[in-house]
Image (tube, rainbow, N blue to C red):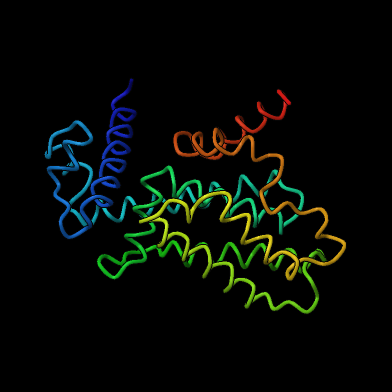
Length: 235
């Protein structure tokens, strides 16, 4: 392993440890000694990568932002329609919030008053939702009388609410909860000829969702694409 590879691995370990510490203790009570010990390195090694606690928090949010972008992009590339990609992305986001401490901490750090830091992940999610709705409208799969602004607001408000409520009760982030939400909303959003082809529980590619998300966290978009391709070949 080269020196650069070791440095990259140490930085990622510190980000993962910081996410756990921020989630357990909150930003104000988090200590750099807890973060460094959780990563298995010295505080000196931590300061080699990050100037202070604020810099660590910014790195957690930035990593969560990257994971959100990579996840959404990978799903859109494998999904036939923008509306189905929106459904699948919401399910994948909920899974990340259930299973990935970096994503959970990133949302909390970027959105809560305790430590608001750029980028704002809810705003990024809103932009992605709006992009998919714009794409659906251009393709004629969105109902003509639906306001894209209102649809985006409803989707983001619901999913952001699930994120907050899910901190205390994981059932709010369950596939069942997301499926029920889309069963209510899709009949209003989708054009009549499109609705029958949409799955509120996620597409058949959902079987690849878990390993693909794990690959995204480790190796980025290309690794996730490889996993999806392997699952498709196996099926």
